[in-house]
Structures are given as structure tokens and as C-alpha cells.
Image 1: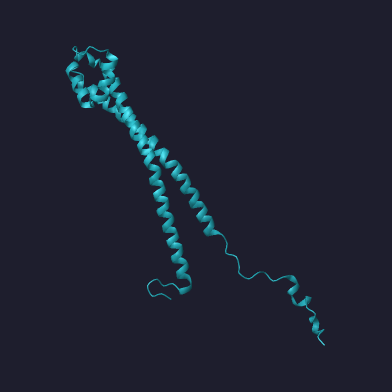
Image 2: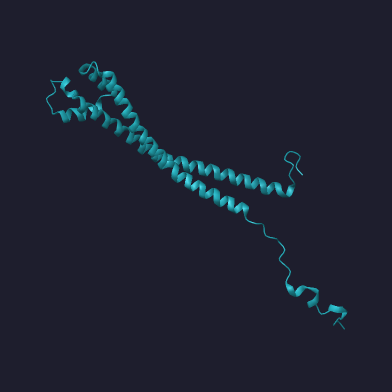
Amino acid sequence: MHPESGRTNGNSSGTAAQARWRLLWKIVWTLAALAYAVPVATIAYERLNDVAREARQKLIVEYRLWELHPEYRGTPQQWTRFASRLLTDNQLLSRVRVLHRDLAREIELDYRRDLTMAQGEVVLVAIGAWALPVGALYGIGYLLARRRRAAPAQDKTPARPVYSEAKYRPDYHGVSRDP
């Protein structure tokens, strides 16, 4: 018996091996979940950028921000496309303040609320796209491990066959056939 653990020599090596095996599986599982998170996060990041750009385009079109630059000789669609990629939200909102002084605060609050809601949807979809498969695989693995642990231990000695009982022996009732 080990003084530190309170286990006997026969069980300690099996328990330690099982603990190492469980630790290895936990490490492998965590690395696999993190590896799957990388492409999901990359796609979500690209989608967040697209949502922000689309929101800026909507802001430009809705409040006709190209009218602040009469020196621009291109079409409003070209100005919208370039400005949505090159200008930040704050730069566009400062242009809204110039055009709509009284309503600028409400316009900014509406814009930020709509952008937050749209980006929140992207984040929730990304979390779901990561968590559902990972959770399903984890649940299957947990159930299989639980089933394996709960399997009844089989006796090492087989059941005695019926013909080994005393009534089937030749020396039954005291009669022996030995010469």
C-alpha cells in the first residue's frame, strides 16, 4: 500500500495508466476543438468586416454623404464603394453631423445599434457553428466512455458445466468404477 495515495500496488499502476490516458484524451480533444475554432473565427472575422462595410454603405446612401464633396467627379455609387472601404465609422458620422446637425445624435445611436445587432448575429452564428459540432462530438465521446466504464465486469472463472456436478460422476452413491 502506498502511504501517499492509500492504494495497493496492484491497483495503482492501472489507475495511473487510466489517469494518463484520460489526460492524453483531454489534451487531444482540447487541441482539436481549438484547431476547429481557427477557421470558424477566420470566417466570422471576414463576415464582421463585411457587415461593417455594408452598414457604412447604407449610412452613406441613406444620408447622401457624397453631396459633401462636390469636387468629386465620379458617380455616387463609386463614392459610396470607395468611402465605405476607406473611411471609418467615426469619419462618416462626422460627415453626418455636418449635414444633419440636429438629428446627428439620434442617427449615430441608430447606426451603432443596428451595427451592433448585425455583428451580434454574426458572432452568435459563429459560436453556434463551432459549439454544436464540438458539443455533439464531446457528448458522444462522454456517452461512450460512460458506457465503457459501466460495463459489468465479467468473472474470470467460467461457470461450471452441468456435467461436473457430483451426480454425473461415476463414483456417485459410493459406487466407484476404479479397480
